[in-house]
Image (cartoon, rainbow, N blue to C red; front, top):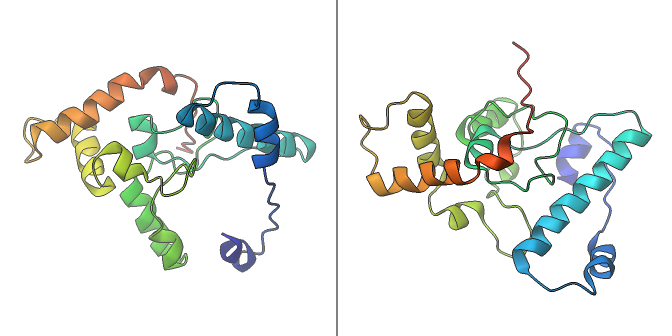
Length: 177
């Protein structure tokens, strides 16, 4: 990320949150996912603080695949003002990144909330994103019955969409058209 920021001449500021997080959670029960979601919310609170002190907006990094699946933390990484790539499936976001000539190491980086070591989105979901995107595109077209995708994979994705509906009610996707 530092390489990209330097190449785009963007100033970045990295803030370590682990020490403060440990203090805040010290007297609470330990729970892995709860701790991870707390990290996402703490990161977002710091981003909003920084944005407020500099009169800026907080841009979310989620793409259409993550937003449709609900693979995000409510009021954490989904708590941004707008999502500039929120109308692009993950596979389309990668194509855009290639078109913009972003470094291949960034394009190939596996999606992860980075709550704990070796956490990978595709592993947690149970399918690679190129398959998820095919299902989501068919779902949007209301054409799941005419696809060659397995019923179990379709069920996995559609169940996730339904189960996470409550997380999506406050999200504003940036659509300039």
